[in-house]
Image 1 (cartoon, one colour):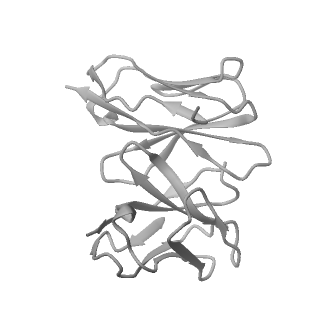
Image 2: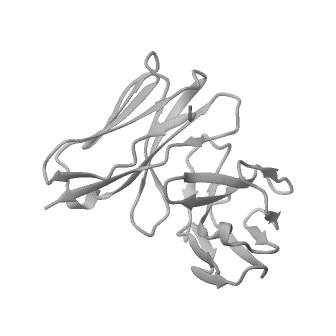
Length: 111
Length: 113
């Protein structure tokens, strides 16, 4: 089993829809959870960062962490064509200087 | 601030040739990283440098060497390129360790024939 699993997609949605992305993981020591957004032919950029369990909201973006199920999610409300990108989850544990990335999930928002 | 810059943007090599990918950051970050990104494989860490003067292997170090020239610059060298090293290479930096926000460069697309 891979340490971090992420469905690569692609996921196509109409403009204005809610986008739901998720990652599952196997290492129960992970405590730091990130979502990076990567536009085509660009480097990734940090979108959301959460510590331990719970929700975090930033504008149209919500990140959720369910440590009991080893599952993290990213929701994009009122999706826009500019949200078309690949979204990578990443996670790390305390004291372990290593970041585990998912493979990335391509999202296409159709105008 | 330019952030993280990488040169070249694109390179074609023949098998057995060598080259050095350059990376520089102007954010005064302590840590720097080299990743490769392949379709279906995601981002994989090649080498990292937690501070000036130190380097450590990542997940896929074979066939690569690195140099942390100073706090700003971190180079990746391919001594004898192989077709399996065809990939997009990203340099990144962070103020502290890996779980802090990493800032990525625009990438270098490398094709080894």
